[in-house]
Image 1 (cartoon, one colour):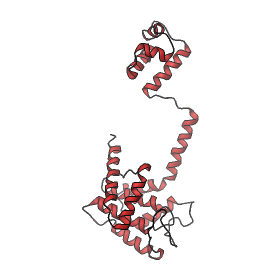
Image 2 (image 1 turned 120 degrees about the vertical axis):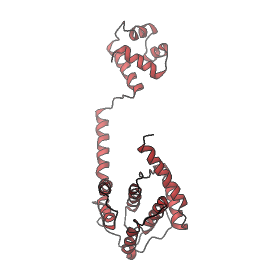
Image 3 (image 1 turned 90 degrees about the vertical axis):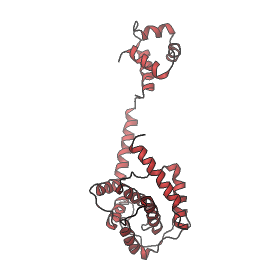
Image 4 (image 1 turned 180 degrees about the horizontal axis):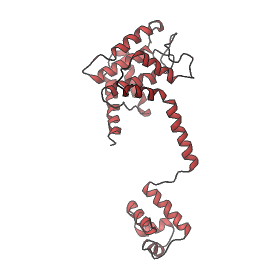
Length: 244
């Protein structure tokens, strides 16, 4: 792209007049006019300023190599940490049901190298941090999880209602020593995907609403707020899918 073309593009995108653009580039109107008409070629330093302004208004920014490498490391690192997510997607892609063995496998992948009991139910009592809510007796966890897994496939007309109640139930059983929140939300996403719905988006700034609605479902047996929260998350998921 020629210098006059770049300047015309900058002017169109910025909405600046030629006088304002000349001031932004630190030159006189006369000099700018000669550049934009192609009568004079700017010096190298002036071309660098033009290129920088062009990148700013077109969004074609230059990323330092060090910053790009650091960002790549973060991306691949997250991919490695999310092996349990990829494992679930692969499982669902071949239309396999979510069963108890899969739940244990997902926990094993998630907590591998972090806990010695990765992939196993807890053998002790636990408390949910920040919630005055009793969890299941660890001796009953295997039985409760067997019943839970079997109930995942019971057909319901109210899909969101079933998912909300099931999610609250899993989190109150709290079958693992650690990682219950992540596994529980992953199962919720799996249930949505099985019904041809996108995963529910739970943004960090909305986490407190998620926890309060979950707590109400568990303590009062009223999952209406949790259903509403999941609906909002699914609608945001659709927005992402449809690229709104």
